[in-house]
Image 1 (cartoon, helix red, strand yellow):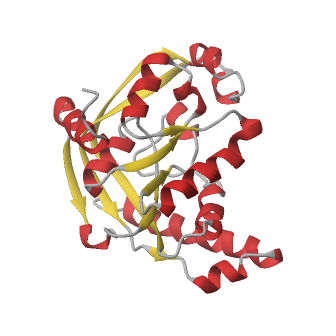
Image 2 (cartoon, rainbow, N blue to C red):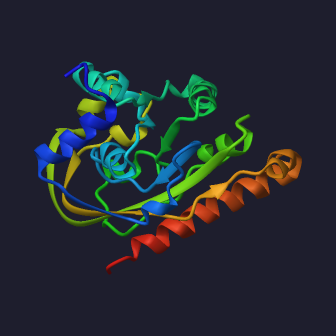
Length: 239
């Protein structure tokens, strides 16, 4: 198992779970450049699903607690994911790790809704507000050829279990307020799912030059708005 790469593990996981995946707009996916993949997020399957659909390893930033639970830590590491640090070091170390990956023309995956939709079960076609980290990364990273690729995951058929008490996860990550409540963590398993690539947005040299002062805030907001609109439009597919 340890000899298998993240892409192979992802493909095998989908096979074992019997997930039928349909990928749309594959021609939009950049193949020879650094990419920041931005997607909606409801299931532990999302990272391997996106890797299998994009047909390339994607280094996903994942929740801090995933690096604290021994068995889970081993699994996400084999998938090529990098758990976020504790809150006090999170921003600096995330940016450092992600930039190093992008500078070697790799794909970095980010779920900008955060942990909320993973903890509180949501409809397959709803999407929460995006956090700003991915936009700052894309505009600040000193990478010459970089695309931001919005991707929508649209579950058409799924099952849901509730195997883990939220309080249990708080033992591993007491800094996460979402775990400090009663109830159970949902586990969504896709049986049939569409993955739709949006139109990539290439970061230009002029955008990087203008990413300063008051302009930086506007540019970040514009990039977030673009990705939210792309994914929201794709989520309506088949509805």
